[in-house]
Length: 139
Image (cartoon, rainbow, N blue to C red; front, side, top):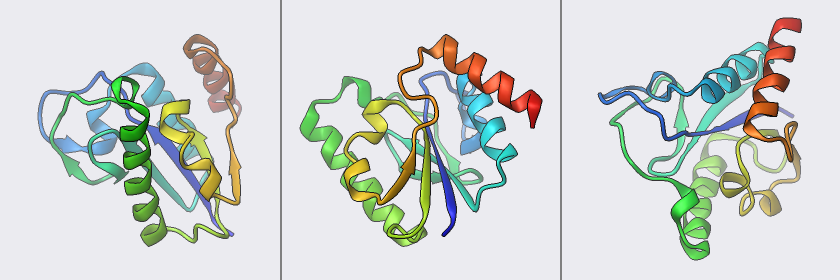
C-alpha cells in the first residue's frame, strides 16, 4: 500500500508558465505542499480544476477556473476525469489517499477510494494554516 497526497489548486497563481508546484502561490497551498513533502509519501499530486491530476514538476500555463463556481454535474465530470487519471498513476484499490483539499475537490472521488484520510476536515482556512504550521515545525 502506497501513500498518495492530493492537494487542491488555489486561485492565487503566478501569471506565467511554470512547474505546477511553483504556479500556486497562496500561503495555504505552500504550507500544504511543505507538509505533504515532510510526510515522505509515495506520490504527491495537485488537483487542478482545469488540468485534473497534476504532477508537481509538470509545466502548465496559468488559468482562471475553479470547482467552487461549477454546477454539481460539472464537478462530477471533473471528478471522473481525475479518477481516470488516478487509476493510471496509482493503485487505487490499495493506496491510501490523503486529501489536503476542500470538499469540492474530493466529494465525488471519495466513494471510489477504499482508503483515504482528510486530516483537516471541517477546519477553516485559518485553522488549516495553524494545523499545518504546527505539524511542519514538529516534523
